[in-house]
Image 1 (cartoon, rainbow, N blue to C red):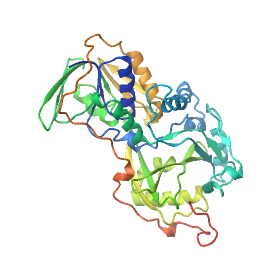
Image 2 (spheres, rainbow, N blue to C red):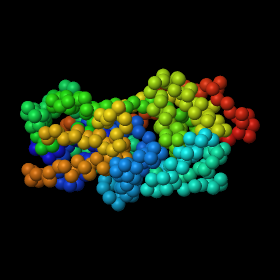
Image 3 (tube, helix red, strand yellow):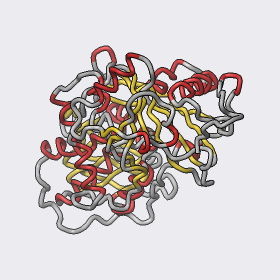
Image 4 (cartoon, helix red, strand yellow):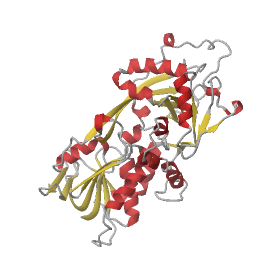
Length: 418
């Protein structure tokens, strides 16, 4: 089968690029070795942010400025005003809250959060504050950053492109034919169940498989030491919706987000909180029990008076795969490397997928007039499923250690989380 492009990786970057290429007229297939969205996409908090972390650190570089344009682009796609058509994607919240603690660094961080963003935070009156932030000192603001459900995003684009997505066995069912300069001439796929084979002859190959890019590069004879991994250890909080309400926000502290909370629901109707920010970055050095204990104390500090005694806690780990940077620091923007007819791409952040697709399209030739007929996928051939959110696959949940919590108002007129 002659193709313009073959994409490896069914996460945010690969699916967005697939949509853009298809509607440009390219003959394109996407190949996924696991579940669609598995890894970074399904593990993400789904925030379509406009560079809050950059503005906290004063990093208004050209790349940091570009990220400010992304929320509006996503908002248009979610409203059906541009492609991809994301009108079926579930938006968990239209905004986040910003708040601080009593520390001086937190006060300075709140000031920094208001600088350099395309849409400035809006200060809330005391009556406009959500119940969880009634006891927080200083300003509470609303930041119009949408939060999507990553699983819903993946499902929406998978449904739109089902005929252009194939599941593969990357270890035993994928073989590349390459030239000495690592140009892919063809690849043979083998269905592990039926043993049926399919030969693809793409003009361009895009590796957009996150951490899987290393193995793919090795398979075509490219160096693998250009990639880095920055791990996260993320805490999950689970509770009845009456005790743990949906809430999304950033507690800022100096040049960092001390904790970023995003909320969703599980299949049993319970509320789930994901705790990102500094907690998740520092948590990589801790065991799950130690991190949960630390997170309990952090939530007590940033959400004074809130009762978490009826909740359950778990954690999960995920690696952020990126192109290597000096000293392993966070890349400022998307990274794209072209070698022969292979493009290796890392979006860095979910919100930057449109920018990644735009830059790749600008580097690709227009579709070749090789075949005007629609792609007909082999039948039967396995379809990849959409990955489950991390809280649906977590197997170990624990109750909070009440000895670590100091809720002086639990027995009296205390504010419950609901």
